[in-house]
Length: 299
Image (cartoon, rainbow, N blue to C red; front, side):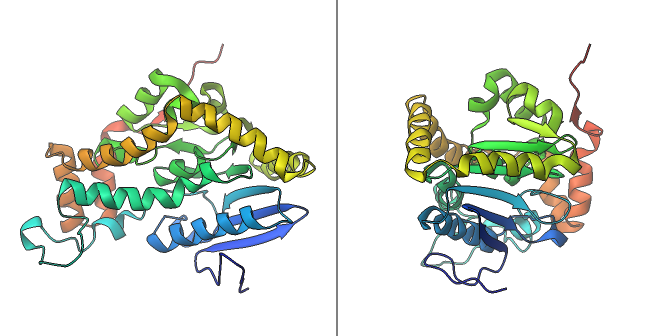
């Protein structure tokens, strides 16, 4: 169904619905596990602004269609067809395969489409199921509330060979030791354990996830949006005082820095992508880590 609004017009890769003071934005590429492409990010950005501007919306739910919330950035789109640096043709515009500054510039443009979640006046609930990996965490951890299914997988496996998160809210959710543990290994954590370390507010069995998310959204929706905005702004201003805004800028630059790595694992990943494709590259990258799941001890 075509949607036409003030900010969002005929989106290609998200769905947008409003009912009972709640806007529901759905990443709608289930066949690609809701992998983030430039089109997806732009549609999402515009849908978020549409919801924030509408007077009949007090709360926003962000979710994914199909089996996953979001499996990350579209790596095939990022790496496929990239020219070697020596082959880059002269152009009037920047190339993401060009200099460090060019790469940082592209990371900043991409980041502006996702950190808008932090800047919205209205609260955003991330409804996380299935895989929430890499770019999926860039979205979820920027939200005001993260509610997950018990068996959801949350992590950033790409930190093993590809770069560092261009958005960084990890330290504000789970503290320095867990942030390092997750990013330095690229391991993932299950939803029920993500609550324990602070990456999520609440977890629920998969068949109860909708009820859990909807109940929080319902309760929030009865509060006037001006009051919700006041509460959100003061908490987020506190995060800014703790450096959150500056850290996001530095995270984009840090990801560009990480892309300069000439280490064997990143070099092998790029070679595998060029010769064999994404599936082989991911297999070789992740094989040494087994299932890559963090398991908390439970007495």
